Image (cartoon, rainbow, N blue to C red; front, side, top):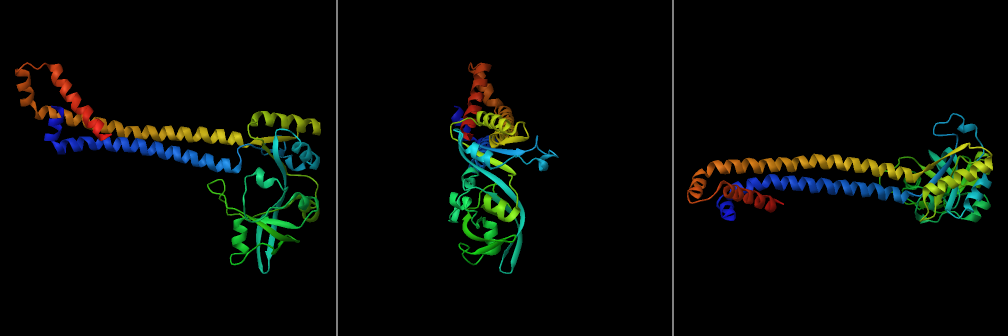
Length: 324
């Protein structure tokens, strides 16, 4: 009987279903978009390395005395590399330098790193190769450039093998990194990487690192590794003149933030579903008013109020199920 009543008033049934259709579509779409955005952000951070711990000079972020602390040295790097929980490690030193190729010049961020840097930070080589352990030992004047640098200096030619002046140091280009996808990888800055030994001895003239990045082996807790690194470096320096920063904590923060946003957006979408339900209620109320003669006849032949209510509830449920 409920189906017959719905078929007899097709337009009313369609309009009733429309509110439910819009509500369900809104909820499903918003939840799917929220989950997709969350997975995209997690993927971008995972590509950067979610098990990376950075060791920086100073007591904490923004420490005014950080520049005067010169205790992160090569022996610290070698000791960290020897730890069983360390997959790879790389120092970082450098700064802004003028790049020059023929008559083209531009300022760039020059990073003195080890051969393991690209694994630590999750960079992939698009063209050529990365520098090797021998390059670091021999203070080789070689350089790996990013895509922005390639576009700036070598838009119409192959950069591999070309000589690029990094400051006053001529370096041979041996590799170009792939462009990182997502918000964590997009940058308008020019980035180049040279062996830290060449950067320190041939370009900068210093013997200390500005930071050391450690990639923790898979299956080992970042928190445990971070505690071990803190204890080890503190013992070596005789005091805690550094602080650590784990990308795992960034991942947890982003997960928490995206989950909160997804719940908020989902709650907004549920309002559409509630509005659709109210629409069904209103249409059924109008339907009751229109069908008073039918209701009166049913009650005259013995139908109870519960039977009439049951019929209209069945019609409402069928409309909602069809709308879903």
